[in-house]
Length: 257
Image (cartoon, rainbow, N blue to C red; front, side):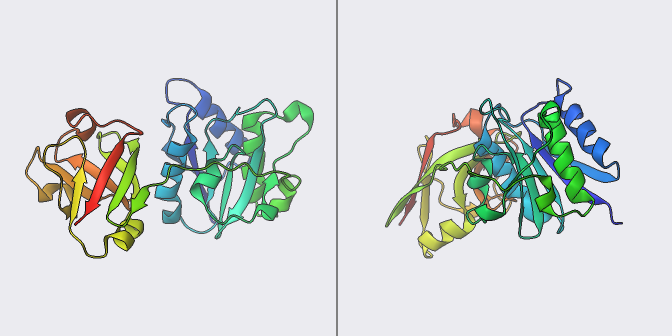
């Protein structure tokens, strides 16, 4: 049997042992798995950031991959861990809205609640049990009963007019590149081949979308679409967030002229 990939996104961090506990629970149900850490450094409880990581990566993995999201797990006392298949890949995580931020068209009738007997209703055990069943090729219906209620959250959407997009900073990465909630397809649809001006606490707006960071001199601002196809503000060999005083959840104005 081909080794199955299991990706993990969590807000456990790397200081404590929680990420190791999750991996141990998964491997105890099926030791022949390839565990891939996407990130354990999601900001605490931040399901929007977790959703960004998932959207940025899941399409790159082969069919049959199992994606585990463990962020804001104890969102209420009677928390639920759910499981579903979407376009040939499997997803396991809390029913706290994180998956509604990632996918627009999940069939809610095909989402299942992972269930075990009461003394085993532990977060790590529930996730490990779900991964184990799917990785052994069992039907997704074996993980537990159909879900009664699928939690949905509304994401922050760009505000648009005929000649402007008011975008929001949704993520600042390790390099302090600033990512906006504007993907390439959305941007080009509204741009219609017009020139652009991107304003972000800067005297002169950025007017060019580059393909790489090195298209501008070291220390200069560069705007480009990143590997996840989201619009990004960066500084070549610099730290855009600090140097431009740009913070998460702030607004950036994109004008079409």
